[in-house]
Image 1 (cartoon, rainbow, N blue to C red):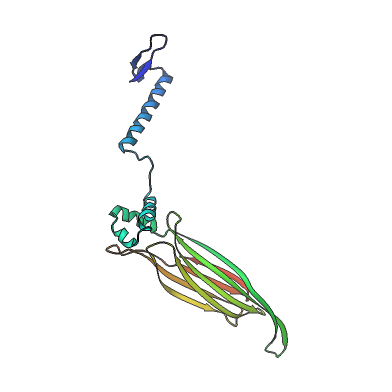
Image 2 (image 1 turned 90 degrees about the vertical axis):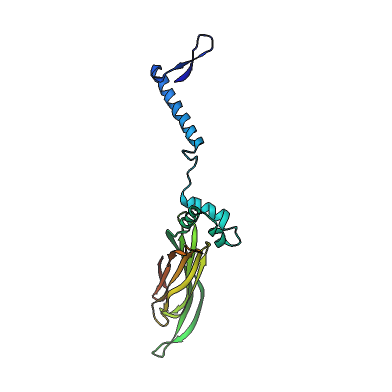
Length: 235
């Protein structure tokens, strides 16, 4: 039923059933009824005005409750079970991104003696190369980073020295660096060399929950011909 104003007469309203209305008017009646029903459902809570995913709920709780807390672990323990689940989902590692940068530190020229006894003018070049593996959460939130840098010098196509440096960066509360599981550096005196490492991180909470997730990022850098660099990484 809908109220219709009758024109050409004194202003008054009459009730018109949808089936008795003209086709265009019938469509208008149905649309108005659907719109009114939708408003009622929102007001009654049957349909949320804006849906929030579990990860988004976890992000909100993390930013407003966990991060400002003087003791994040105590703050987490005080959350409800559903809130703790949301934070855990937000903190889970779901994707990995990788990046690298490189450059030349120095170049020097000097005479060196070959195995034949001949003295030749040789140039020694020293370079660096850094690789970062970033582990991210479901909303592209940065959880942790594993980094490896090699500094090496080469001359006449051979590596004269090589040093590898590794370090970790944790960007999210509850993610902890555990240990370096494996590391290796090789190549001095050879035309090829490189470095490899793999680290262990874990996501842990106090109490009965314990550790619920882990990540094992790794990086490999390979030098060929003394100067050419190739790299790979993952988690």
